[in-house]
Image 1 (tube, helix red, strand yellow):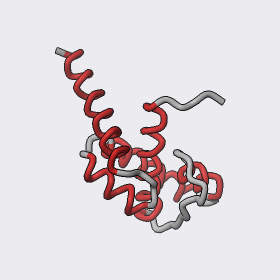
Image 2 (spheres, one colour):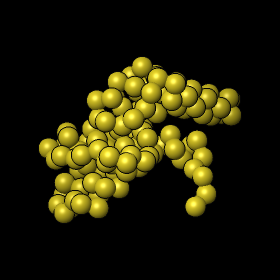
Image 3 (cartoon, helix red, strand yellow):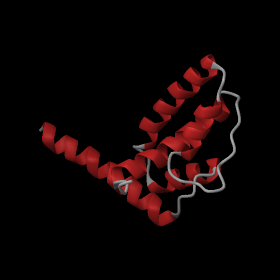
Image 4 (tube, one colour):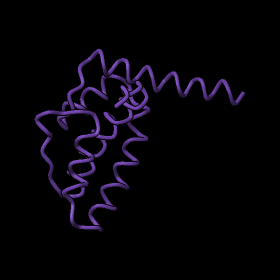
Length: 112
């Protein structure tokens, strides 16, 4: 399998944070996998979920959370990752925040 790009990795990490927050907000539970890889929280929970209504609710919340996380600074991102058990350190949080800031800035420059 090919190596994931930064874009793929960062989006999967943020998706896991958003998914963990959504799962807990919706009243369900999850356990972070021992051998964590980006996307594992989302994939594991979806594979085990049996309640369709809960699944739709969690996915809606997670999608909104993912969009929100793409706009936060590195400190907020690090706090969220720690709260939900996604292994992100300070340097990675900085790179992720910088990556999404650069994407927003590129879009703003393009639209002018």
